[in-house]
Amino acid sequence: MPRQFIIPDKAKCLGCCTCLAACMLTHREEGAVPCPRLFLTPTAQGSVPLQCRQCDQAPCAEVCPVHAIEVQGEVVVLNEKKCVGCGICVLACPIGCIEIQAARQTAATGITLTTSILLPLTRSEQDEKKMRKIAVKCNMCYFRPEGPACVKVCPTEALRLVDEEDIRFWNLQRRQAYASSIGFQGAAE
Image (tube, rainbow, N blue to C red; front, side, top):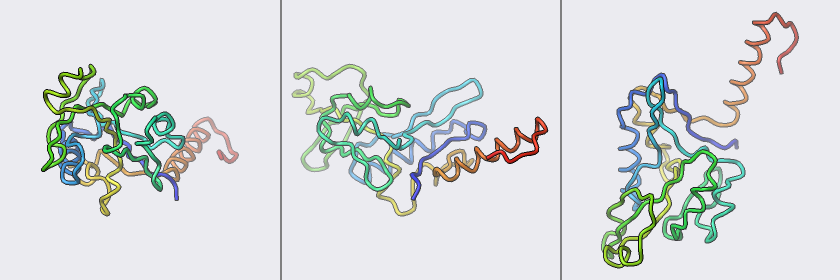
């Protein structure tokens, strides 16, 4: 089965953040760090959601010293309970779709609060606030039979779940269109 990932259509994105909210709520309900696993990125043409492309080689998994990131079936999954927040995966991600979060933990409810952090927490901050650093990345909502929450809730269908076959098909169409535009009569495969 070809690996699946989500691609955005920036022409359709309104920047409404519905995808971010759905991602956060879905992961909170699952007991994971309650924050979005995708990023709304501004461009000259508008905004576009950006998230993990589920790389074939998974460089984030290759460099994780505690094996908190693994390929499970066709999805690259980060186990937040194993993560030590070292940030090596953030550096290895070719797309920049992994973020370190500071999470407060409670015995009764697990992870309850996150804040995006750029600087490491000092030992006193960790002790004082019962905070720990955890990496977060898109996991395609692998635990949801209906698929990624962001794709399901997007009001303009700006997010699309695709696989490698879709990409091959689109590339073939582009090659054929280009060949036709320059008058080439042969096959564009």
